[in-house]
Length: 261
Image (cartoon, rainbow, N blue to C red; front, side):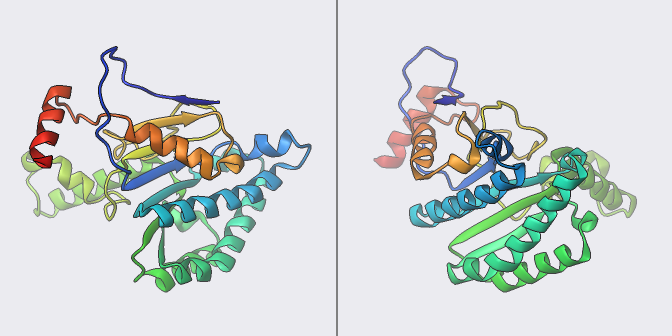
């Protein structure tokens, strides 16, 4: 069963969206997937890696150039120490074993977040994978690890404050663009489609600034079960929506007619 966030208006509005250029995902439900099968939680996280592989394949096959995955939040350190340790081992193993495969498929990997808290081994593997794949073009895969939206905005504010303190920026001239160019995702377009699996309907401190005009899609499907069919449901939901960006529906349709003329 899939629950979507739809426009609250009762009017019938034809969809105007094409495939999203950037999909951002909270991969929720790994632990519950394992628990339902009488397995340890880490088994669900391992199975979730298969869903990541499916996600990469779908984006490559459909020509979606940007995919951002929330792998580990700054709040996830509060989980039981044993689980955190196993997650760190899984992250390291994935970086070590999958980087070459990503490179062979022309996928560029980047990691955003406060990575200084990770072990020196994980930081080395991140650096190695990013350098290996840095010239790839087909898909930009971004992993948010030890990431939090509030952390990202606060860091950007600190950098803008430094520019003001150094005399490089007048505080009266600070714009959204000034803040945006200091976000950890400054190299990415804003997400077109946000997906959260696992039945929860919240953003959970993920890309708070970047999701301002993103279409939201929530599904009860647990992340390890988010297969190609589930992707089709999410993408079809997106393409059947009308993205207005503050305009009226008639304005959007009128602009589309002019474009297609």
